[in-house]
Length: 350
Image 1 (cartoon, helix red, strand yellow):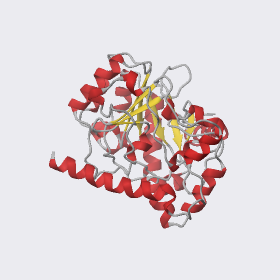
Image 2 (image 1 turned 45 degrees about the vertical axis):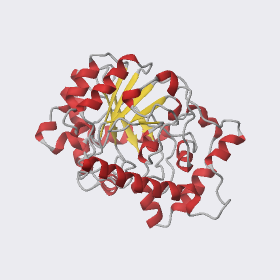
Image 3 (image 1 turned 90 degrees about the vertical axis):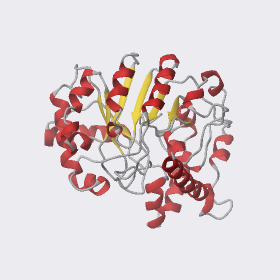
């Protein structure tokens, strides 16, 4: 308990520092319009939720990788892991919520010791779309994970996996040496049992994040390039590609500052701001649950310790009617979700 409190205090201190930077901390006053000012120009402030469609649950920050762009700051040394007690509280909510999609994330969610139990129990409820966000390399990292493809198939899991690029150099530079080769082998394993194959009913989607301080190209063109390259070079198939903007949070924010790219990147996000995306940003139809059961408008707010603006703060006190009337918490990082075609955990929003 004491260790858990110390971890939360350390995380909170880091989050407060990052929020201070994001709140124009590295700009002269007035240089960069606030996100609140921007959405107010089109009468979209305050942001409020629509019908809840997606319950995204972060079951822990532990991961077998340490990716440069990771907004979760995940890694092997992270000890924040969702307990079975909190999972049981989530299950109670899942049974009664209006959400049709359950989205399990991490870290590497499979590293939670109760992951399989949770999937099995949640599968009994019969959610329409059951997503697990896998980093692919976890399947090859240890023998105890080698059967994950079969486990996913048994429970008709929709697998969403990070894949920075179709080339070894760009992938390994972002995610670590050997990641590309392991990812390719894992994708082949998933293809072999039907994932990503037309007509199988087993969905395999990939996620692309830019490798540097720039915005992604169009999602449709990237998807076409990925499909051609992976099929041509490795015989790999998948369903959809999601292009996600790197938000200025955690390791990516540290990288932007260390490389003197922070100001240019923030200006790029503001210049690419598209008011047409605001109505469909993921915080309007998604609720994020942290490893210890606290509620956030999105996974990014969770990392910045920006809790929901509601008297209901924890999954154990869940009241959908109360949460539906809340104002969504925003800050400068929200420009990342409204740049260009918009960005969410499900890819572009417009």
